[in-house]
Image 1 (cartoon, rainbow, N blue to C red):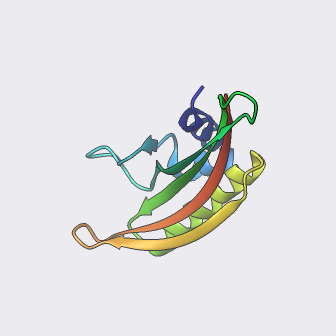
Image 2: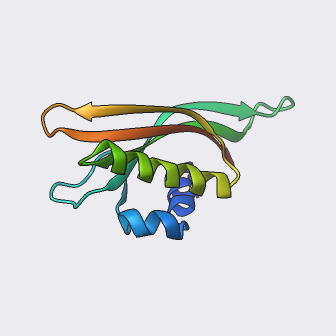
Image 3: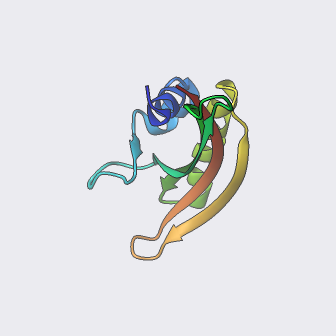
Length: 120
């Protein structure tokens, strides 16, 4: 199982998040025509962890950016709050949080960044 699969499962397990976004959790980008609000995640970085004895990879620390997109800042923030709660329930703490806007569509985003440990 990949780190992305684990992250998606953790987000999908949240009933509170599902109330806000249903099943609209996708990697990389919101599919065209997808209703909002929605959550998009992407891998922002990876640090490999290897054994000292033979140098074989045993795990990786993955930095994920998980963005809530919505027509308003209030809704984007509410979704991001539930993303953070879902990740906390999975034992993962938020490392950073930011906001944004897409100037073409005027959509608002609230992004949480987490460091996810994926053991092979």
